[in-house]
Image (tube, rainbow, N blue to C red; front, side, top):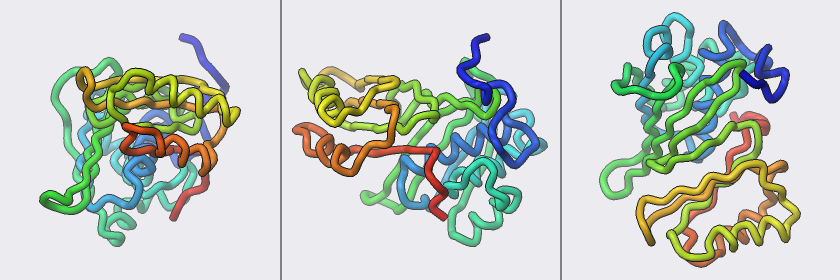
Length: 230
């Protein structure tokens, strides 16, 4: 196994007991929360593999909740995350999922707010792959590969010729370097997602330029290095 940095071995600053089952879980929950935006009203969490067998004993459910509150891995409030979530009106339900995933520490989240036609939802699948590092593998049915180690920009758009070139042209002109890029679509000329990890946080101007592209419906940013929002 190859390690990209020392944190792959010793893990980040964190509230224990386990870098994989708590620190990684916090980061997955936080990635989902930042991608969703405002605090969701409801979250359904399904654990798979080793997570499913040990999430209560290792506090993975508490860690996920802390991440959903947009807290860092070392936030001292994490042990009381369930109480904070209840007080803030966020209902979180946990269970064991069915099916096989490539990594044993996999979790799938469904975040939602509102009801009826105005209901807003986000689904996200991620794995805690060791030392507090994570891999996000699915966002709303789009296949991605995101580490959370870099600021990530998600561009939702139609699958049209030249879209990726238009996106990368804007990044080049703003001197933004791409660390990794995932592109997936739900069908020819259908919905598509371009997910980019950048070496630096995108500026508000860059986000505006991406959002102004023809056939782009939404642009979002996730940056796990930034201070907690609450």
